[in-house]
Structure formats: C-alpha cells, structure tokens
Image (cartoon, rainbow, N blue to C red; front, side):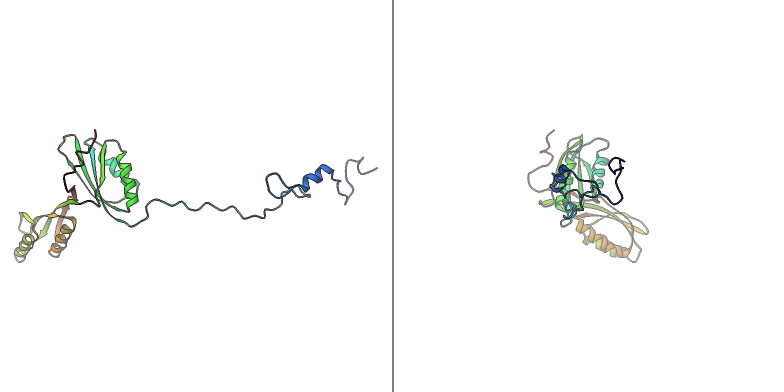
Length: 232
C-alpha cells in the first residue's frame, strides 16, 4: 500500500509543495513584514527596531516660582469661597493669604489671593477661576503698580522692666497700642507684608503670646477700577 492511499506519510518523508504555495512563500508579505517560514507556518522574527514610547509630554509651567497676587470680584453667595479654594487646591497651589470683603455694591464681594507659583501655572489657574459660577472678574496684579497693605494684631509679653522699651519700638515702627494689661500689650501693625514681617521679627525677642494677620489687601494705582470693569 502506498503512503498516499493509506492517508499518511512515510517516516522521514515531506509533503510536496504546490506551485501556488511556493509563490506565496517566496513573495513578500502584503503588509511589509517578514515572509512566513516554510516550516511551522510561523512568521519570521522581526529584525527592525522595537516599538518606542512617545516622548514625555511637556507640562505647562515649571518655570521660576514667585509670589502672585490675584484679585477676584465675585457675587456674594454661599459656596463661592469654597469653590475658589477647591480650585486652587486641585491645581496644587498653597494659598499664602486670602482676604474677602464687601465692595461698594451690596451683592458683590472682593477676594485678594496671594500664592506662589510660576507665571504659566498661575495664568491657567486665573482663567479657570474666571469660569467658575458667580465669579465676575479676575485680575493678576503681580506686575502692576499697587497699594499693598496688611494689618496684624500682636499680643506681646510685657513686664514692668521692658514695657517702656516695647512702647518705644511700637512708636518707631508706626504701630498703635490697642490694649494694655499687666503681662501683655496688644499692638496693631499695618503696612506691606515685608514691613509687618520686620515688626513681628523685632518684637519676637520679647515673646509673642498671640498673633493674627489679615493677609494683603491690594488696589491698583491710578484711575483704573476692576470693579467698574465688571460686566453683569
């Protein structure tokens, strides 16, 4: 009985290859990859370079970090302060100070925000802040001429021996005594952030019992007005 009539192949014999199969094996693959091997029907191993991941995407910002001052005009409604703080937290900003006050309009409030960040990141945060509900106007006054003031109340330890010295320092620093007690003096200090920092450092040698600061309130110099620029 022949090998073909028995439906099998003799040991060591190889099946014959038709002309169409030979042409298919000899021709390059249609997608440009290596041809299929004659034995096993598996694709030949790739010889080209392995797939490389795309380069890392550049993130905005990343420049020099400096102090920025933002002014936001908002509607006086519940939840506005929480939304503003949540946006800054989501963008990984640590707010140095946040002062909120009424304006001349009864239903409008003004926020003065000081924070540290690079110019691009702060600019993007200001644009997102402007898109929030109840936010009417946002302005970065970092590079503009402004009037910048802060108020601090400092409760200083005082004794009979150093009380006169403390009062002299307060007078020279243009501060104001608002309360006198047997063991303490409460002083009101106003000025720029740098001036308040200097006064606090000066009286710290006597001992500070309590300290509270309002944070900076800022207004642009000149006749321009952010509140008048608000379109409602």
